[in-house]
Image 1 (cartoon, rainbow, N blue to C red):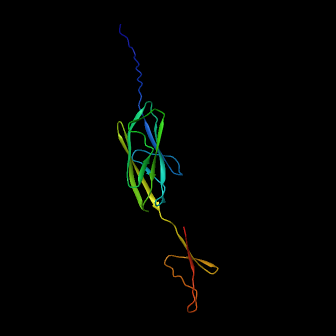
Image 2: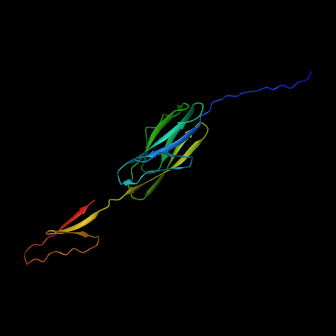
Image 3: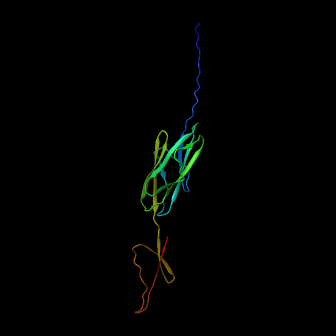
Length: 171
């Protein structure tokens, strides 16, 4: 006769699932969603600051990172994976973004990670710091703060004698 039957089909597959994060120099790890930003700490002009970028495969199968590239003045990538690198499930790769500012203003760049099925883009931002200078004028045993543009009065002196002060600049 007629009867009802149940067939159960279990499908098991494997697929990569990539997550991204970055850790700025001296900072904490921050998740990095596609389109997110890598914010590098401000650093003195002509000095370098870095951030470690982490790619983790949380999926059930291997994935491939076809390429990693960056645009933007003064940004550099260090320790990149080879093109078409496989990343097994549960594994991580890291590389470094380095920024060396040549100016004080903010500089923008972008980081691109190309996977087999899509290309992801992340923003990068860094800026330079100027020196913070303090000025002092020293006469005899007195030391006083000196503001930019402030006049310096020299001690009185007789004709043909010399008078002097010392001006110190500290960083």
